[in-house]
Length: 202
Image 1: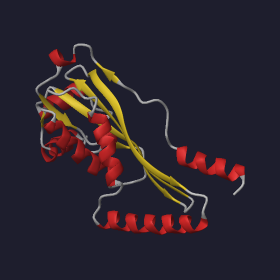
Image 2: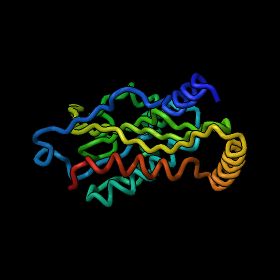
Image 3: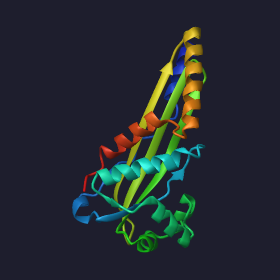
Image 4: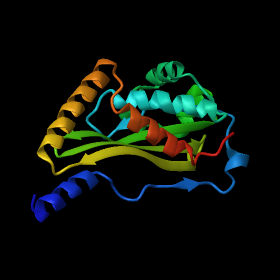
């Protein structure tokens, strides 16, 4: 394969990596971190409809493992519907103090699924998940912590037979994940692990 084709394929694998991730932790985080928190519905900048809720459940589980007293997701969603903020997009119109008061918590975790991508064109196969989470203190909404987690896998080949195999394996993997509603599970786990490697424990 010609050099320009090789360069193009490499660019395809690298695409979607985005800019530098936002990373912040308040200097006085531990003294200000509220004991009771809520994880709100995630904003979705991807085209996948299953990934955001799956990632939210994964983040909720890790929050509790980290020692955070996180309100059950079902209760959070129920109370948000009463505020008119049941959808992630509607949350942006609600002040953090109002949301925290309704949920009876001292802190709110906001999440955005920035990328949830599966590309399979034979010569190039790429799977990538990128999730940004922000933790704010109520009632003022001051940022305590913000970070981005990413998990990705990719394969690049110039061999036609290998490309056919990669393409078929990708179709099979996607079919199984769709059946069990667990799209991009390995990459999602890696993204959440990456994210929580920098969240202070309670």
